[in-house]
Image (cartoon, rainbow, N blue to C red; front, side):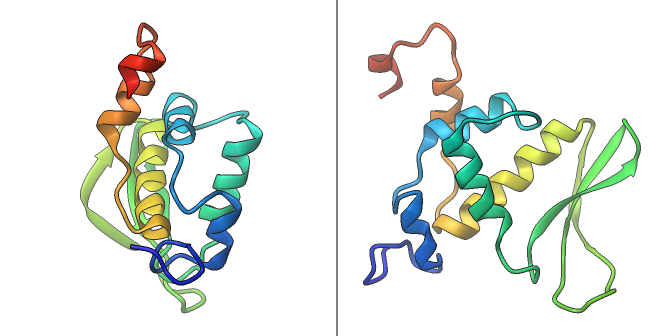
Length: 132
């Protein structure tokens, strides 16, 4: 659902700089390479997703270095502890970063990332016609 300015409901007007419709190619790129260098388009998207207000912002919490990661949510109160989210536990920072990306995507665009479409986009043998 869009607002009067074309941005998805709940998304700031700056959503228009990436586009009112999320680009699954960018999500697929992040899925392939959550850590490291990114294309200019993905860098712009990540800046938007990471610039959300702190209250309710999803983050990766390292519970045991190199072995155990969880998701947390920040609060608006400075110095408050991070609110841990459910029992989701990840064994790699990349998996945890993808989970945070997916939650921020949904918060920003108002719809969940289509993980099936992202997976199809990331299949090396898929032609553009097969991805549609």
